[in-house]
Image (cartoon, rainbow over all chains, first blue to last red; front, side):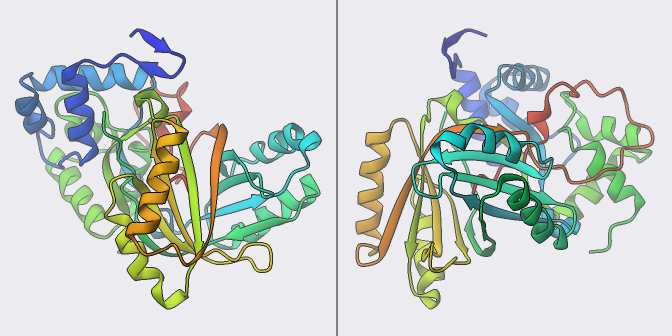
Length: 157
Length: 183
């Protein structure tokens, strides 16, 4: 796999077709890749070989089901805090040290650190946010989801 | 939906993703002690019950050249949020859209969406277009571009491991267990 730039991996036309196709979903049946294979003009074995390569190359981060945390008894939330510039790195390390923090982005706003918590039970949200406040000395704001309009998160390859 | 032991085993076995073989459900069945047809039935039921929210692939958007990512938020009347959210969701550059709780007085915004694009100028232009097209210009708004990602290791859903688990070839790749939703 050739890295064109730091974040760009070379995809050929068949890879692109597969990436766009499989983002629409993988069927649950005995031969889930038969249709994608036939649309791409390759066999099923090559479909999975290419997926494997795209996973290894970091183009894909997930192959298979994504679970709804709430339906499994868990909970998710989006939270943010405002870190002073000189403390930002230290606070980021502290926040990322929590296993419940699924991802964390720096954003340009007074609230400059935005992270998602994924926990096993809804009660853990408040507990973990409190622990993060204690560990960082920063006030943490919680933005729980009230309604979901779109979670497609698809990218054209 | 009440999940039984086999459902939990299946969920745990698939936490690392599908095996890369042409008949992945047969292989998963061998790991958890179910026939291929039982795996398929159970996965369909889990999907219908919404336990599985998506079943496909998740792309690392940077690797496809999507280098700009903005979280755009508006303060809209709660009773209009659903209609506006539906309008936003229909647009191609909107990758996620939620209504979230406000945190007054620091944060008056309740309608959240994510826009991904190849570069910042493009995303800024897209934001102006969708603000106009969805009739959002009258509402207070903030645009928060992301600078860099500090962590993306993904949500873990279970602590259990399948009793008949095969050696975990993905153990070194924590990214494969990630939750796709970004904000």
